[in-house]
Figure (cartoon, helix red, strand yellow):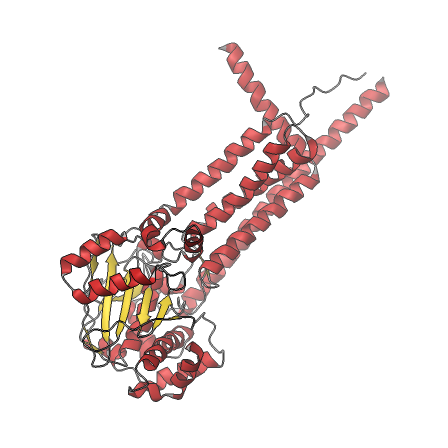
Length: 177
Length: 333
């Protein structure tokens, strides 16, 4: 038990240390900020396009902010992984893709479920009759907030997961002197 | 050795400084985000309160007077709206004076004929905010081709703006079903209304096509059953496919979605919707003597529908002679 506790404490410490080492560099803070801004712009654009130019949402805006901020952080960690670690490059790419896709997916459901023109276009492209899917789409729309909360949770879990990856940062500080 | 220790300490201090600075920058940016949105929200709230004379309590969760038949005065606002209002609004739309989005994009379809008359077909939901705001324009447009003997006060769902609207009939807003009842009569067109119904205290919800068909079959309303099958057939083609509510057909013109987004006297940005804070009395007051963005935009949205029907009826109705309607017909063609 004591060993188990020690391992989990070490794991948490390692993740915290990794986060500190990544975000102590201004570049990765900048990437996170720019990423969050870009994701919010994509979200805003998709919602407005779905509603004929009007940005109207029925999900609390603070959930949207949390989604784009966690996506921005995940994106920054992914960029770090791609740059710094060959071993973690693939997971860095997948993390980066996920960080961009989640806010975009959120925009498809955050507005009124009654106007699902973007989603309908995608379904039609896939050969699915939107009339048949209308009931499902509206059902998804009625759980907007919960779905976005799940997306935020997914971002956080991925951040925690990727921070545990060996980016070559976990060598102990060399004793000097 | 001492110099190396001193160097390590300096490095660690710089490291700590970076960490603190980074954290401060992140917090500052998040705070800025929150502050800007709070300011924007407050500004919108202020604008909303400035444009509505009375702010009622519990807006966003009110069903005050739902399903109440309109009194004769309010019904007259719809049935007896002056042609001058439609003409003026049309001119404003044509010269770009209106800031609300108003659209003419539509698809040409074969008319749905019942008893030798073309039809206006409406498929919508009482839970839907876009249906809610569009029924005002629809009612105004239909009033130029016939009359409503009854209309009812209604709301969109709590999760969809809770905007004040009209219902075509006194719908059971606590259950799930489909209503085809309306109190419209015209010698020029049929009005086939298919109103999907789900609990109004939830969010937007649309019944599945099989459920709708089941409900329509139970009504034994052949016009409604035929109209719904017509919509299903049109949905096999991408251009006219059902992509959300409201879905309307005005003679030979099919509209996917509302033809305008008129949500009060300010254009919504985010979750603050001016129309949510209006009472039905305020809406009727504005429509009876249009002077503001909301009223003019609703009349202009009605003009689009009027022009569609006029084209379908070869301009045989008096309202079709209005110059603005003629000009709009050229746009929707």
